Length: 221
Image 1 (cartoon, rainbow, N blue to C red):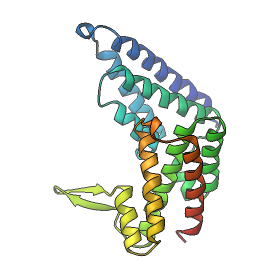
Image 2 (image 1 turned 120 degrees about the vertical axis):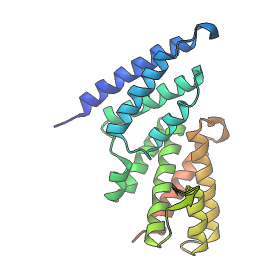
Image 3 (image 1 turned 90 degrees about the vertical axis):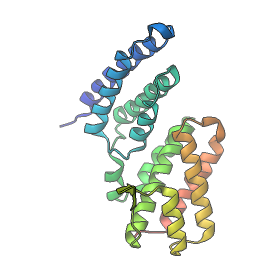
């Protein structure tokens, strides 16, 4: 059964809640009402928990917006949700892990290329970076490099930069590749944190070409 119409209807309602929350944040500071913002957060998290993997870049980006209580956070959160709606309604939505398990990197990167053609460099950068990060994790598993480490008695996932350094040290790929990966991860982080002025569409295009070449050359097989 095609669940797309129901998902679109669901996310539309959440976006509507975001609009109400935005109006409440615009009020004078002495009249701020946190209830609409909290309801919007709860509805968004419920959607993410049922539809998206917790490590998906959309989920991570949304969680970063929920730290504060101000217009910019709400605007950014609604923007991410609108992008998710577009992906779902266009039939492009699949959990990232499922895409990678099926080994269709090229299809996911083609989505990023389509975003670039439409002039949407920011979601394209996040998509490309997500493919790269998942590839690093798979390379680490393939080369018996732990994905977690212990910190304050807890098991913590390693960041992509740490995996990049360890993979280069293990000579899975060379130092030049390591520097390229570092640069791509930096661009992806800028996009995920809303620092859209730190990079250009041309740089995202070069990132797309570089990551595609990298995942093909440095195979997990």
